[in-house]
Length: 211
Image (cartoon, rainbow, N blue to C red):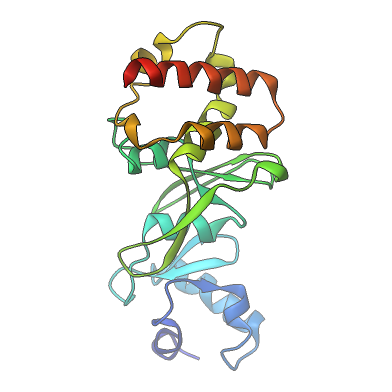
């Protein structure tokens, strides 16, 4: 199979995976060898082991970074700083995407961006919802309250007792009227971590002052 034939078979997909290579009608190992050669020519881009994409000129779909974040390491959902920026709970525009996963902590860097995956316990892997990206693909992202709680859990070392200023001065939280306190407490309990529950309690005191 030459590259043009291969392109016609896969250009309708946002990504090319090892699983798809098993169904294109030729020996998967032969195709993988060809992909290695096409990579060297810049025709195929490797996003991580077993996941590829056609070069920008040849692909019909440009997958969003949100979609890629979900697909490159599974299961995972987008959370923490990127989700906080998405909901405009912090003023900064976040470029690198942080997700959480019950799998081990992982980091992927490729030509399309940096994708960070932080481990949380399986019991806390919940509290996310689906949105549609610009291509209409479904993406898993934390609910606003869960993005907050995930962020607190992964940054517990920053928090000290009775330091409410940290929420405004250090983290610059804003637009907090969208948050529901009962959800914050509910999501915190999934972690079974007393310090996290204390931080959430302090944050809710801050919310009272913010309101």
